[in-house]
Image (tube, protein in one colour):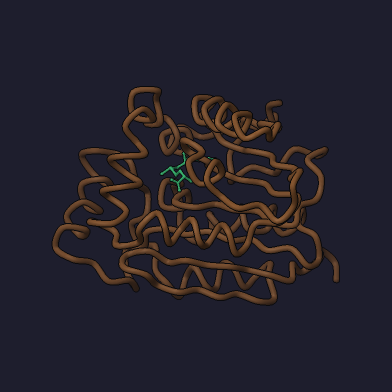
Length: 231
Ligand SMILES: C[S@@+](CC[C@H](N)C(=O)[O-])C[C@H]1O[C@@H](n2cnc3c(N)ncnc32)[C@H](O)[C@@H]1O
């Protein structure tokens, strides 16, 4: 299913790199090596973040290769999983991996910045991991996504995620150099100016409870108690 919205070139640019060739090496190069050696947030820790927050009805935004969803422990034997990504390759790969586990996932092509499809339902958990640093804009602009997510969450649901910060997290010379490279000549990231306080403020607007832990260069967050529009 495709959400009808017009996406900017910059928005599309954040998802375009995830072609089949990149996805075929992603689990090794990004999840195994880069997450551990560069950003210092190993994939096992992110998998634990999934395992402690996944709900029975889960929406995953920007699932990449679907490695986490394939290896996660779900709280119920028949979870409802839906996916949203601007890139159809990641949706295809993740859907296939989930099918191998016997989970039929509904896939929506769309941007995290756009309103969610009207018929998408209500979720116990929503995740956006390693997505926000790919999305263009300031925290105020990225915060539009948090407002949309809050409206599709159950009252006792959780929005969890992780994102590489530009400032407010610890950078090594290697992570600083790669962060610069990925914001410049190799255009993979859009996180210039992404700071810890800005992330907290952006999450606290639509959520009453916000927890953020910094691990290496990464902000790891969980937000609960969505504020209802008009309340
Ligand atoms: C770095 S990968 C992260 C994949 C996976 N979540 C992980 O933790 O390894 C970024 C993912 O976000 C998606 N993405 C980038 N910009 C997006 C946007 N504006 N809306 C939705 N998904 C987007 C990409 O297509 C890709 O699947």
